[in-house]
Image 1 (cartoon, rainbow, N blue to C red):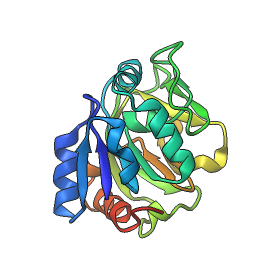
Image 2: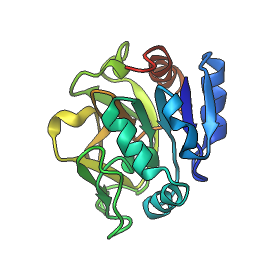
Image 3: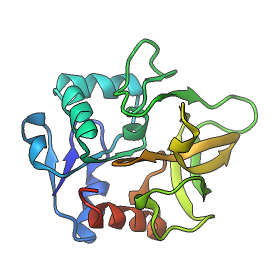
Image 4: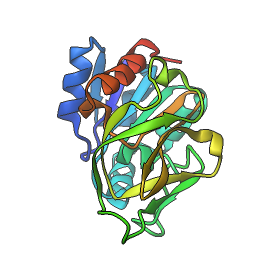
Length: 203
């Protein structure tokens, strides 16, 4: 069973619609009180890093998410949800992220192309992860973001994309996986990822 975290900043409607279409069993969860009963957790998000962390903290999700990640629950972050898994962001100096994956979030440098990075772009595989089963190099996904994650460990980059510079399009290790792109808006390739999330519930 999947918990979709509702902390006031997620695009919950489109995520829930796709999970339902794929036959996923999930609940929208706006309090951490029941998180222990779920084997998988989806953390969506759009907006500002500082606001996102403030909302997570205000609803009491920060420590439970850290604990459950360490305990091996399957955690999937999308867009802002991905960025908040890391230590910090240039978007909100002085605000700590969840620190589940080591690294920081950086602003794309100005001048070489338009920021935000918006639209379809292809990715390449850099390391293996069960969530990318069935995906090929060159698959296209839909992006909307001005900031990108910079993991400390290169092996945490699962998928890479080029826009202004090479950046991490998906990151993960063991039970943790996250995408900068929106799989729920990425047609067949995105559906493959979300189907993997449902089928591998609890890995």
